[in-house]
Every structure is written in C-alpha cells, then in structure tokens.
Length: 492
Image (cartoon, rainbow, N blue to C red; front, side):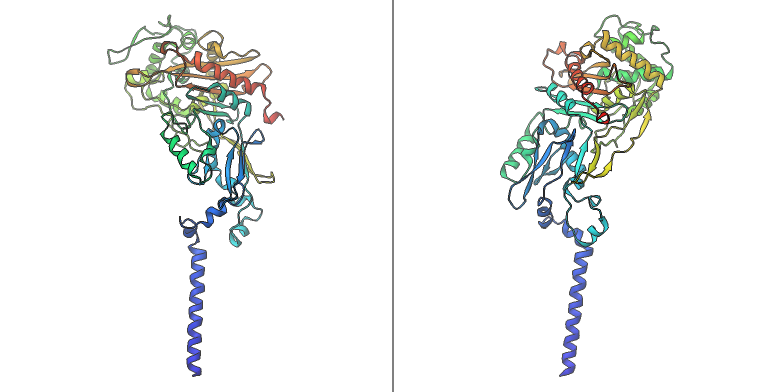
C-alpha cells in the first residue's frame, strides 16, 4: 500500500513540476505573444488606465487627458486641435496613433523604460507603467498661429524652419481636423472617422510633409545654385544666351515667359522676374548629373527623412532627356517637393549654403520635468559653396525689394524670397499652385532667424491672377514677422 502511495505522490509531483514549467513558459517566453493577442484586453485597459503625457508648445501643453470613468478610463483631448493636428496627429482608442502621438508613444504612454530610474528592475519584476512623459516640441506658438490664420479658408500648407539649427518653428496643413473627434470608443468616433475619410479635401492629409507638389519657379533657387557652383554663370549681371521663346531641345515645343524682357536677361534680372526661358536653358547647360547632384544636396531624392515621423520623398528625375531636363529645371515635369523640403532650400541659402536636418522634438521629459532625451546636434551637409549662397541671398533680396515678392517685405528686417506658380492637371488645366519660399533676418539679428515655404492650392483669384507673390507671400510675411517679434527659447 505504501508503495502505491509513493508512486501516486511521485506522479503528483511530476504533474506539479509540469504545471510550473508550463506556467514559466507562458509567463516568460511566450508573454509577448499573449500581450499582443487581440483578445487580451489587459494591455489596452492598462494603456488607458492612466493619463497620457502631453505634447508641449512654448512650454504649454496642447494635449490633455479626460477621465471618462469607463473601462478604458482616459481619452485624449486637444487644445486648438485643428491648428496642431499636422504635428500631434491623433491618439485614438479605436484607430491607434499617428505623427508625434505615434513616434513618441513610448514616452507619452509611460512604457519607455527610460522613464524609470531602474529600467532593468522595472522590466523584470513587474510590467507596471510609469506616469506618461512629455514631448517638448520646437514649434513657436506665434508662428504656428500666423500660418494657420493665413491659410484660413484656403487649401495648402506652411513650413517654417530656423536655418542655423533645423528646428521646425511652424507646420500647418489646411484644411485640417480636430483629433479629439477620434478619441474614445463611442459610436460617434466611427462616424467621425468615416466622415473624415470620405471628405474630398482630405483634412487628415498632412500637406506640409506628406504631400508633394510641383515646386514651379521656386525650384529656380537650386538651378541658380547649380549654375553658379558649376561656373556656367560667373557674374550675376552678365547677359545670358537665352532666346525668347526657347525651343525645348529636340522638340518643336516653345517655352515662353509671363514677364517681359527675358531675352538674354542676366541671372539677376531673370531671377527677379522669374524668366522660364533663362532657367530652362541654364539647366540644360549645367547638365542632368550636376542638376541632380545639387538637388540631392538640398535634400531631394531622400526617402529616409524623418522629423521624427516620416516625410514624403521630394524628387528630381535623374533619367531625363534635354527637353525634360529643361522643364525639370523650372520645377515642372516630374520635379516634386514637400513644403518642408522647400523651406529647407530657403534655409540653406540663409545659412551660408549649409542644410541642417529639420526636427520637431526638442526633448522628452519625465512627468516631473527631468529630461529623458534631447535632440542633440543635427547632421549638416553643404548644398552649395558659401560664396554661391551669398549671391543667392542677394538675388532673393532683390525679388522682395523690387521683383515679384514685394508682398513679403517687412520693415526693420532683411527679407529674401522667391515666388512660384506651378501648373498641374491634364494639359495644365488645374488652378495653379501658388508658392513662396523666403527667409528673414531682423536688423539687430546676427543671422537669419527663419525660413518659410508656403503653398496655396486654391487661391481666391482668377486663374490669370494667381501668383506666389500675391497669394503665398503675405502668409510667409506673417509667419516671419511672428518669429522675428517673439523671443527665441535660447534667449529666455
């Protein structure tokens, strides 16, 4: 009898050991698969069981958390949601996260191990969440407001950068939407999602960084840089061999100008009055390899740009014939750019030819305010020779003083700009996009403080009256004034 009892006890011990081994297997080795299982509600409940950290602009939160008292307790709120939507994105209990809410989710949700002073112990002992941390942006509230108000009632985008650092000072897309309508898990959220996705104006599309446009004549900044760097043009006031009209190489197609007096115009006048014929021929003379290299140095054809969320690739076609190269050199054919990319172009001119990688997050902090991470120094590349940048600054200043960009002039500041009117649609039948790229330096400043790119898709004017100078330049001026008048965080 005793032998049978021993056998039964031994068998029970084996079963107990098997249960313990299986429990360890599930809890240690297979835990991630259970955490990610759609049927596991514990992770979701924990995720929304505490307030989410905030996204800050000029030290003030533009996000918040509301206690609903429900199973998924806290839902996201937004202050001036439509104005900041191209930056924050949304955090939805149903549809997930986008933009900064997505890329900085670990900090905001409290899951980033750097938020605890003992990250290894926190990860091994328990799976508790730390209080959500905060994300401090580079945005300047005054610039963001000026850009948003400038685009009111229009479709388009604005991007503003600090040339010397790459800090993004404003990022606006219009029309926009309120991310708070996607918070929570009520039936109204699904209806809002459906309405936003059906809207023909695509309010959830971030036009500042996720849509590319033909840049039109604003691309002539890069064509001029390539011509000067390559020695094709040595003196801004030398006459160019530029017929009017200009017959595209190998075709019978004639290229004309909107302005008069472009025949053989020197680069200074051609830039000031945006002569298509001069720049098309210059692009052909520079050659596709040098044009592509210059565009690449400014940031074109880079699919890996992140700010920290991804930016659509701006493109300059490297496989073109001479006729296509002529059109590409005036921002047509397959040339396309985001507003952020064109702000980088203006910033490079303002910064002595150097391009700083743009960024949107200055630092992340714990709930108590201590720093978790900082942006650090940003990569830099030389887009053109410093001497070429000096000449381009002169050209851009001339555009604002007496050319097509006079609407961007600011008293007490030096402003440089370039207008653009980009044709698009079948047979160029669409309403042209109005572009303006610019930079500004206050008379008491040691260096340019802001570079801006504005694109207006549907300007309120007759087709023949639409121009970057008339529709986009006043918006750029308002943004530049806002930056010049507001103190820099470095000065406070």
